[in-house]
Image 1 (tube, rainbow over the protein chains, first blue to last red):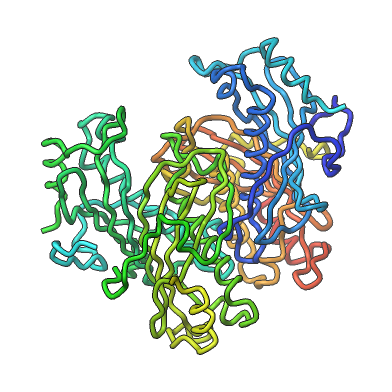
Image 2 (cartoon, one colour; image 1 turned 135 degrees about the vertical axis):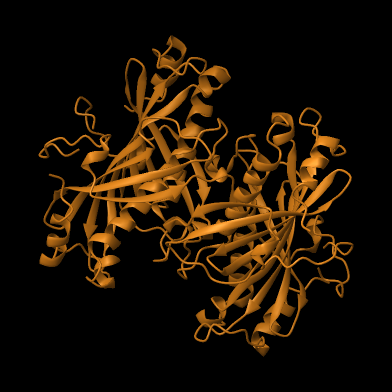
Length: 147
Length: 147
Length: 147
Length: 147
């Protein structure tokens, strides 16, 4: 997916810049008794919303709502059960011209349940068109760039 | 719940004024392999959204978005499986001063899966306060009142 | 709903016997920016699952999985936003022959977001038919009966 | 993702082997009034469940339940609104030793809303370990391989 990006081990909790939590719900379970991947995708989404609030506070609503997920790529690594509290780590792994890529991991304690790479596209809410990242967005992203 | 209302058999398809459909999703299943009640509640919500669009077209967005569910009372009557297409029937069973009550049924063919009575409260989106039903809303509701 | 039951103020945190927590997800929001009632219904479900685990531990899987929701009646009292952590309180308000009624409340701090009364029916998982509560189930329920 | 695989244009309805449908629900909408990507992921899941039922009927429950999603990669291409009925197309794009890759598209009429590539891993439900595709599974997959 990101052939120009040095690899980043998203199963390693140490790589992430921001963290949030979610509780597993009974409704997340599917017929085999595991948490459905759809719920895990919701955890990833919460990690991204939290990331934007934490790194872009003060940039205004136009910035906070001016991103859309262009592509989402997840790897499901272990089964998750109910009840549980998961932790979601998020880090910037690439900053492009009009988009950036986040790396994410969902953890149940030390167990990595799933990892994801997500490309967010920056757009103008009025026109709906993609636009270059502003300098202040770029600086905010750099503050959460993995080392 | 509605002691002043003559009873209405919501398991009888003949009582409903408007109908819509929904498809059951794999994600709706819970660990016992049945559709979770939460999904059935989503079908009821779709029936209400469809009801408003069908009976209140032309009354404007302020009316369409000016209702909130005050209370929801459901009876779950039969198990539902995947895949299936359900039909949701909706009818007005009581018109109050600032609210109205809908009767609803979710059906899988002839089988009644669940029934519900739902009180919707009319409010002013700007102030967030309850307000009396307008004459045009009242007329729209009367057109879908059960006989 | 429960005309033979002395009233119980479910907006009062002091009445509940067991408590659990859930985190609000971004996915729970609907177009008006509030948490959708469907998500609140999922919080109530988690409260019931937790209640069974806490009060019926040791009674075996046949008991834990031998209940189905017969009816669900909720009142939505205040808007809920994201992010938030909600607390769900649950208490037994009536013990019948083959069923029992739980009272529930969802709270965001001191604010009561919604209350519910839920009738759970006890059944035999093999035959699928309703059956009388056993003595051990009855004792477990009595331990969580509101005073 | 699949560098050894000749490319396949998943925005082209002509490439798919099986089709199913889903209805969009009001609950799928998020605060910006669009269908949330999580709902689109549920449509993809329904496409895969339908695919297995259609291509592997007669292979037995052990086969039907013996797959897990190892990785999921989606590209979100256009906004989807409510109400709508979407069609989900699915096709085999690669058959490996112990896994296979499906290509999928979600369409609202002629508009392609999203595409996905999904690697399903074949495993033994008893041990939980990955195992080679059986000959009958391989034949079933070949019948749905894109041309």
